[in-house]
Length: 137
Image 1 (cartoon, rainbow, N blue to C red):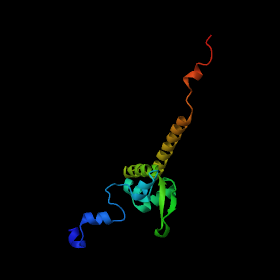
Image 2 (cartoon, rainbow, N blue to C red):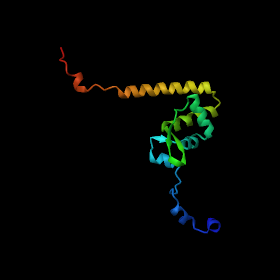
Image 3 (cartoon, helix red, strand yellow):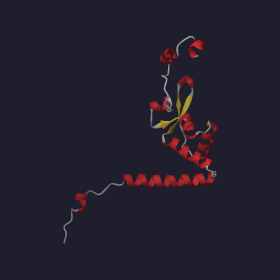
Image 4 (cartoon, rainbow, N blue to C red):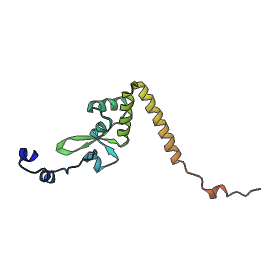
């Protein structure tokens, strides 16, 4: 059907396309830098609209994005990679009937737990030799 409409085979069209054809859910900008996600990645992960992403950023549920210039083609937002998981969590809780205030409390608790984990991981572990340095009496 594609050949009848365009006069060229689908395989030839894919080979000549500027952006290679892929079935992956990850956008081109994400594949270039996996530490960041775009607004489109967040929308796809959580099943939400672009406006919802903006509202959640304004409400403080998602971190503010870093705007990256694409030159004449405009700009796009880069969020930290964890923002997609966070948006998925928020969307699931909202679909479950939780209010924004309840979701905010849950997110604050999650942030506290992550801070505790990071602090524990950053704390140096005592070496076995240091604990045996004193003489026993």
